[in-house]
Length: 292
Image 1 (cartoon, helix red, strand yellow):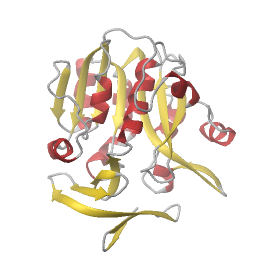
Image 2 (cartoon, one colour):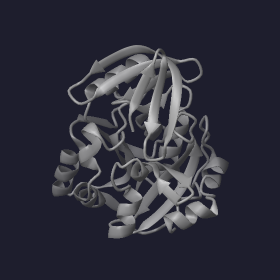
Image 3 (spheres, one colour):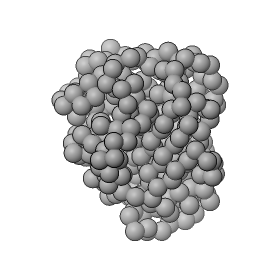
Image 4 (tube, helix red, strand yellow):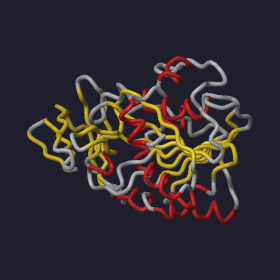
């Protein structure tokens, strides 16, 4: 994927698919941190928009859809007590905000490599992840190092959320089989990992956006091949900011207990028990492609 800018028109291209998305945005702030280019734009409909290394990350208008669906489904899909949550990435603060909603979450560890993403998101986006909550352990570090060290310590988590940028720049080292081998060892016996990617349908068949863009193997493909966490479920949400808007979330577990039925009622701005269950209704072509 690459970027072209013409006046205020910002464009993100998906080269592997031959499609592009353009937004008429005004640049509010840009800086290069030690890890990546961070840009904040203003868009008439989406509001403030966070872009990292030229890739759309979040907007004020619809970030709550991504973050509620990415956190509430794995948290509420199974009864948990004293749940420990690990968020890898998530510098905009939305995943942290959603994890802290529930009293049954006893601890949240968030590992973000770039402190400036956290600071600028607080300043410009106002997503309001509560970093001062006593349950929160915010770590600024390379997640690959953290996961390797956590495995050596025997640390485990009940819910692990991969809230990552595209597999370039600071995230590139996390999209490797070695990282996923370590990550799988951090999952409790009843735990789950959640990540996300879009699926596009072409005349040759379906494929993940990550793989069709030439950015390496998607985690679903890795898990189907290696069986590190052998049980996979998938669900969907419509997120207007992202290319195609049809966005997929993927759950990986050891024991295969389905998370499609919430154990308690919770009402978010987007999420509720009906949306939770309905999101697992995948079209036939997606089920066949995912082999689940």
